[in-house]
Length: 325
Picture 1 (cartoon, helix red, strand yellow):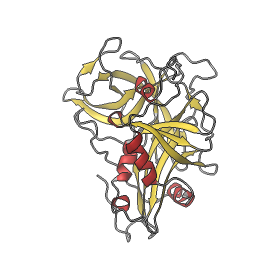
Picture 2 (cartoon, rainbow, N blue to C red):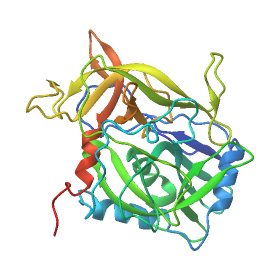
Picture 3 (cartoon, rainbow, N blue to C red):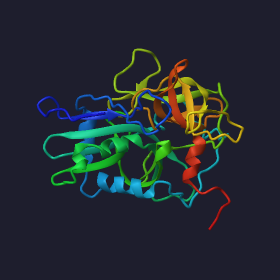
């Protein structure tokens, strides 16, 4: 659990999206954020909070009221996207940072961050729909800044952030459109539309041992090659990995191509803090096949593994193609 540090030591904290190791159940175990001192990125985000934008209390209310909501629109089936739609792995510009921020007006603040990506929804013209994890919103929801019910002098909001330092794009989140809390996913809207490109999403789960790329992020530049500047003062890399299997909500092993419930996906390597909400991509097809949530203890033999959901869960947020009012 996170805690507020004394003002004399730090102005605030940034919590990165990560789910700590543990047994596969319960699903909603609290994430263990990593705290770092106030950065230039945090300062930019806090200064971007506007009185006219949707505050965190309103977004949290929408989150509770709209959980399980099915949108009256369809998400494209793109298991084999055209070359123009395939995800390339040369940089992380197709993935954004999602930041939830609160400033108490007395020099203290809290920022929780995760990753997210835009979805291609036919007919959606007045904004962008962005998928991310839900546990960073849950994390800041439990902040003392929001628990006491007193908003006097406080400012809060959520943002979709993209671009490296010097060319940062900060788009306010205008609404929580839907969510599936037990799967830890959240659908957000920006208005106006963000510059983030949409990603192709496959409704079909891939087989075990499928080669994947997962978008990892870090706030310090790693020594190994392949990491590129991402958002603000952070770095990212499309890391090679493998699908290790699937589990149902009870933690039992399940298989694609059967009637088993594929509620969660296991993968390697272990994702970095801040990568939660980011895409898992089939290296061959270039389509999103999963979403990272963090890490979990699979069993005593296999140990800790990457933990996410198969992309077919995303389609539960939308009307099935061909079903009209």
